[in-house]
Image (cartoon, rainbow, N blue to C red; front, top):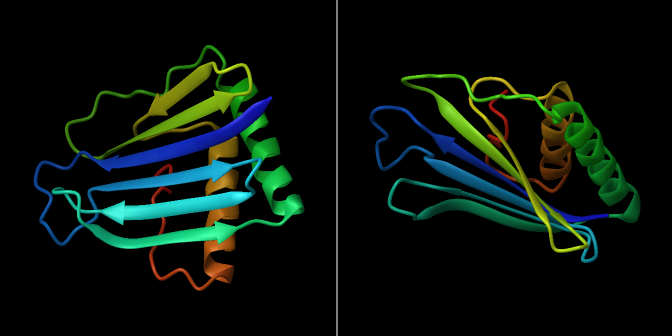
Length: 137
């Protein structure tokens, strides 16, 4: 069983001014029913962070999307050679302590975009002021 997942997004642009988002980290924890997110500049200063409690239904929906992503991404490579752009990494923790990593650049599993939209909707409903960058849509 998947217990938590983390989506790291990185701007791989050649120049990232200190006032631009360089990284974003979003975590979802099943047992705590908690979503945390933060956007940071190149030197690690936070622009905006949030910690949101999830209903059981929303939490179950997010983890069902992760299950679909895992099966969809099996054996596929989402890393494209790019000189400028972004990179994402999905780190999935299982109850047996094993960790699975799916990563990519300009493309992602189809369900990843559905997951990004679901997380954006949750953040928007909680008056989150940032614009999430999870898989780059």
